[in-house]
Structure formats: structure tokens, C-alpha cells
Image 1 (cartoon, rainbow, N blue to C red):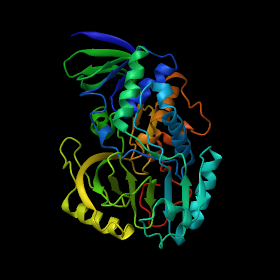
Image 2: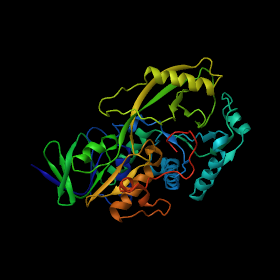
Image 3: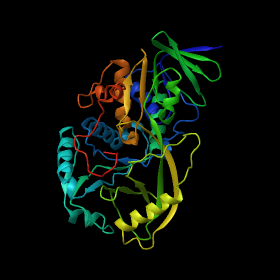
Image 4: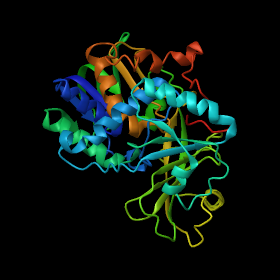
Length: 396
């Protein structure tokens, strides 16, 4: 039985694992092995809808999204390649009951460095002339928002980390942790070999709960099947921004092929799924929902047609916010439970995990590590927005 050594092992070569490897390499920490059971980004990474926004009522998340945006904007300089980021802008609309909290949320976002403002209905109408805007009472606008490609981004993270000296081992499934007393000392691979390490980062997304449960660690993550529908609008839209509709609870964004991507923002009820065995397309009920919601908000789409659909899985925590946390075993760091937020904050996730590994704490005062500690669930101290939107689902 062979034994390899490393200072750090990262389990999972998806977006967050790759971002962590990149951030460690940026700090000069390169005695790192990434173990990916398939290929980089082969899990749920490629299923992301790729929305880039900083509109969060949780200030630490807004700050993380702002960090992510800065990296996406400089991707060519940082990675030397196009990662698929398209800066279309991002608009969010609310009804009368949510105007006050929208304004409070925008102010709080600006306090942590987000460039955002309130705009009028005439400005939104000029951006989205096909939309019925009558039900909305106020809008927030992020000129720097847009959408990106999570798979391309994961590949860029991984390539940068590899060029810095980090070892990325694909087709390398991990069977479990090696534990000595109260400390993690490495990982056991499915082929029987071992990698000894001082620190192990678990970035296994929707597979995290059963993996850690085998070691007596309860991570409160449920796996939810999330459906996406691609639509040809049947008309020329021109340059339109991402539109988050918090009245009818939907979001749409343009796509590079002239289509639009539709997602449902009403997540009050989870559709529990097995990430290794789930329906990888929209079901009939969701297609009917799509037709109803899109037809209501965009009445000019009289010749629209559904072109395709797919589905992925969210790893959802009780408060819909991630776990980025040390412990409960010495030498263990958990980065999971991203609840649909993972793409836009991935550069900041990588940096926070690198901070925890190297320094034991966050180095960005806007992003306290305590916000994302695993113990908050047992303590009953959930991470919640200060500015909740009435009837607007779980994604804020």
C-alpha cells in the first residue's frame, strides 16, 4: 500500500476545490494535492446558471460576491484566458411590500463595496422593452453584474493552480479520511493508497453529508434538484441584462446563442434528490411553470419556444448559506453547502479557505469566518439576511 505526502489535500475538483487550490497557489502554498473522483468540474459545477450579482442582504456574502466580480473582470489578466464572463448588468425588481428592504439592502451592499443603485421603471423598460413591469414598485441595478461559465472558470482555477506547482489528480476518488484521535492526518483513496497531510479540505458539494457522516460528523445539507430551461424568445432582444423578478419569483439571463435561460426563484419547497441518480432535465410540471411565468412577465414573447432543459443539484443548508469552517476535527476544513450561491463567490471562497488553512482566520474584515462556521446550526444562530423580502423565496 503506497503512501504519498502533502501539506494539504483538497477533496473535490469542482469549482470550490479548484478555487481553493488557486488561492493557495497565489499565497505560495503549493505542497497541495487535489483529489477529484472524475475530472475537474465534472460534478455540479457545469450545471450552474452562472449569475453574477452582489445583491445579498447578508453583508459577508455581498462582500464575497464583490471579490468574485473583481476576479471575473480581470480574468484575462489573472488567468490568461476567457472564462466566459459577460458583463450585461443585473437588475432586480420588487413589489410594493419590499421597497423598504430593497433600499436598506442596497445601502448595506454599498457599505461593503458593492457598486449598486436604485433605478426607475423607465430605465428598466429601456433595457427590457419586452417585459411587463407594471407589478414592480422599485428596482436595484448593478452595472457590473452579468453571467459567466462555471465550468470554464473551474478549468481556469485548476490550470493556474497546476502551473503554480499544485498536483491535481483526476480519476482519484477518496474513500475516507484518515483520523488519529481528534485529528485528521490524511485521506484513503479507493485504490487502497493513502496521502498523509496536515490539513484536509472537504469540498465535495452535494456529496458532503454522507462522506463526513461516515466519520461521525453531521453536516446539515440537503440535496435539492434545480431545473433550468433554455428558451428562444422568438424575437430579437438586443443587449439585455440579467433580470431577477422577485414579484413572480423567476430570473432570466441572456445566453451567447441568442436564447435566454430561465430559473425559478421560488424555493420554499425542496425537491430532494440523489446527486448520483436524478432526472437531468426539466419535468412536465416545471415546463408548465416556465410557460406560465415567462408568458406573464414577457407578454411580447408570442413566438417563444423552449429549446432545451437540464437539471443540477444544490447542496442546501438550513439557512441557505455556505459552510466554510474549520473542525470539528483538527486539521479539517469544510467548504460546502453553497445553496446556489457558489459560482459568483468562488474566488472569495478559495481565498477564505486559504486564510483558514494558513492563518486560521479570515484576512478580509468584511468576511468574518465566524459567519460561516459549522457550529452555527447546533447553536441555533443561523446566518440570515437583515432585509428579507416578503414572499421572495429562499435565495436572498
